[in-house]
Length: 252
Image (cartoon, rainbow, N blue to C red; front, side):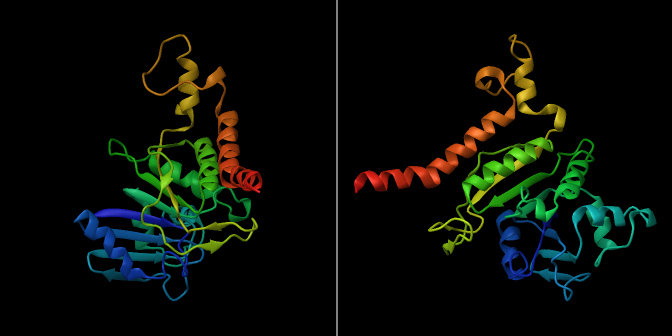
């Protein structure tokens, strides 16, 4: 079966309609096992399992890093709610991690330990293909900002940041930007773990003399990722806010 781990699962989001996850098995034509893990997994689901068609589910009220520690024995600390068999499942790196609107760049959410655990899990597959990290964000700007942070953790995009064709059609009012509407999980990107020493800008700096691995384009000036990422975020902000407003003013 295909094994997935849904990070930061919550009752009002990923767990709101368990039957809908059957579309994954239908699309793949295979059995699917999903581990839902997150501090906001409700008490009534924590430690239990469910079967929806060809999709087997387990629910754990924990962070992913704490779950991995719990699976390593008493030294890992107190077991998570719903650990045990789920910890054994988590110990095997899945085929993919899924994070829906995770807010990796928000310090209040404390993702650092989990991101470190994801990196270790991605590096522990031996000769097997490493798991992918699939991230959905509400806006393009959030996607670009999280790409910068994930890059510092050794994750590089395996696909371009693109619009999610399956996102909800419901428009939601932004709580931080006046007169701004967004759709949940409207942007998608898939990441692969290449390790911190294999970041693209390092490889491209090594190619300055015409040597090194092929592929990729050198950033102008041979700078690191910070300046280029800042430009992308600035461009996204301009496209989303400044550009439309300036056009409106000119029309008036």
